[in-house]
Length: 79
Image 1 (cartoon, rainbow, N blue to C red):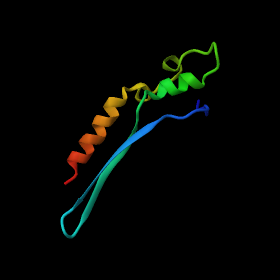
Image 2 (cartoon, rainbow, N blue to C red):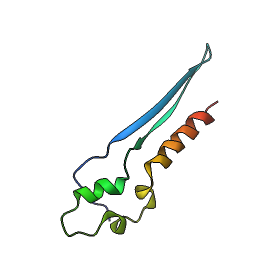
Image 3 (cartoon, one colour):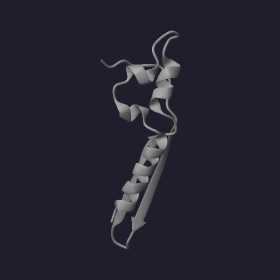
Image 4 (tube, rainbow, N blue to C red):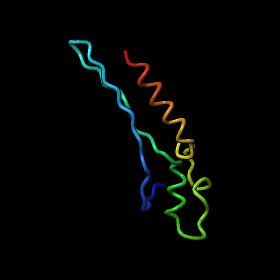
């Protein structure tokens, strides 16, 4: 089941641009600066189970550093 919760998640991004005289390559991505489940916890009413219990998708509970590393890997992989 999907539900909308009030609130927001602060995001950061990284973008890289290369120009070889002819072509332009662009790579990058955005990622949360806090666990998404932390933002969900703030939006839940008092007495509700915590977001880690309610959210089945482990990606939402991932450490934001992992997202940042993935974006960095993507940028480096662009040729």
